[in-house]
Image 1 (cartoon, rainbow, N blue to C red):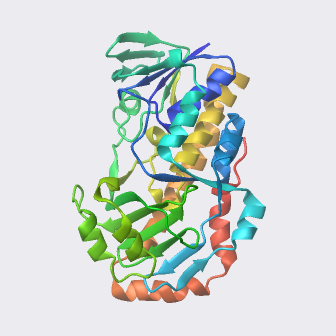
Image 2 (image 1 turned 60 degrees about the vertical axis):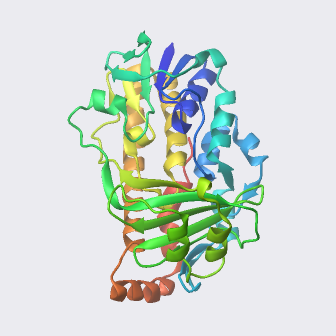
Length: 367
């Protein structure tokens, strides 16, 4: 049996590992000239680690250094809006790991036979019969896996009338600051903007910033330093220590729901299926889950029953997480002074169990 995977990011390489471990021949078509990722930090949450365990790679990631769960959410003055019980989260759900995106790509790529990797291959069209048209000609397989991201050629080929990416109203900056002491990971909410930070295993600090803005607007590090200058410590210090060449900015998009993730001998996973806002930090974790679940279902049940089972299992779950991520972002990006003041007073009064119940569906996945 052969699987062609379109896209060599986290989801695509994870799918290649999953199928290869089950004895399938795999071919990974990646349009970039090499398998890598330009990015910053990434929190792999317990469900993502369990998916990596299923691929035989979880312990390798853990060896790089473990991380605590997020401590919670603060106001711009530093007061806690949400304070998580870190020990309880670890006890109930498992361990967290923070990793650079490029390092995770390297780990996944190293588990795929080099002859299966085809960088510099531009896919032009995917057909439901398992045919892929690309710059090098035509390839066919028993299964085509579309893991080609937000602007997926696979998705457009198989569902040409499905709505495209939808801008959610805010842009995102990511950067890595030099090593410095911080107290764990946390996020801070202001009016239409927020700042998050989490420590990397080597002492550096991964930071992400979000702000309401028109699509395609740009802002550099100097503007960000001024914008967040009066927020609580260590936010100004983190921005002061960062270098301009470490800052990445991307507008924030999500994809409207598909009615199915499969068509014929093809399936989509990760951002190609359910691109979501980063508010729950679940994008990469869901792609890892997808890859493991797809390989398990198809290899165990056979092609048609397996694809149907994959769709039944993954579509409701991922679309729920897309919806919850959107909802969290809505609270964080209110701009009305009266509403944000009410939010900052009301949220600390809610029981901790209210927030833990909203997290449990994401963290508690097993294959």
